[in-house]
Image 1 (cartoon, rainbow, N blue to C red):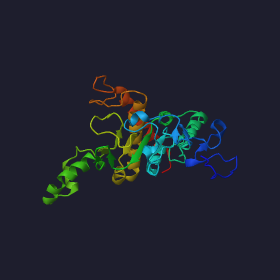
Image 2: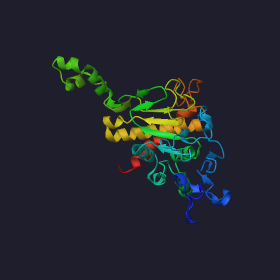
Image 3: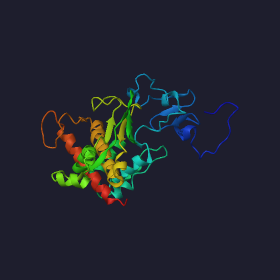
Image 4: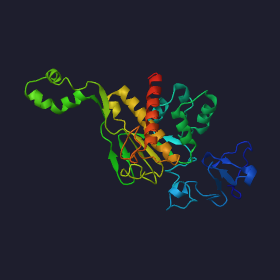
Length: 311
């Protein structure tokens, strides 16, 4: 705010001040209040005129503070969008959409997916897919989704390695297990193949590919609670080491699984857990059939869209 005998006359056409936010002089008076989007900051008293919209996620912190009282380290532009935590995260989000849809996925000045642009895409495109619609729903929600691409995931209590994903055939997997015994006997892999014609040579994925961590509930029942207080999706980047092209495709479908399955259902107030029995057809109480169908559809769409992009 203006200080006595320490102010200067500035142009009336420039309305931005502290943190680059807009001064709402026409409502509260000159250099009095600053609009941060989610709430108004009163510079005269150094306080917010309303509580943090996500105050219930931080019960030990006053709802009137900003960035946990540490604005040098933390930032809180508006708390209403998806935040890809790297260029790789943004890339797999785009690959999961059609090339036409992905043109509307841009980042704002804070590194969040631009809500206005994705809403523009929803209005301008003749039709949009289920993945684009799911992303739009998540972006419009007041909660924050952070998407990480890395082999480890973090909770409030520990860091866990998801391990190395593998892309191999049944034959290759069994050969790696029995390789030493056969080579010690003077046999080659060709000998092993001839002796095991029933092993499949079709490659498939195995391993842990992604994890969704919640701030207040634990949908997996044992992974832990998110460290940031936001919803966090971790995509294992190790598939790139197993097969670069197929690996990126697998990461793209994994993001669709986690974000447009688990996260979307959590935002919609639905059961976001798989259950102990995973099936597209079973109506058992141990199986969340609705979620399984949603995940299958979103993964299939993501892989189809991935193939539409020029890599």
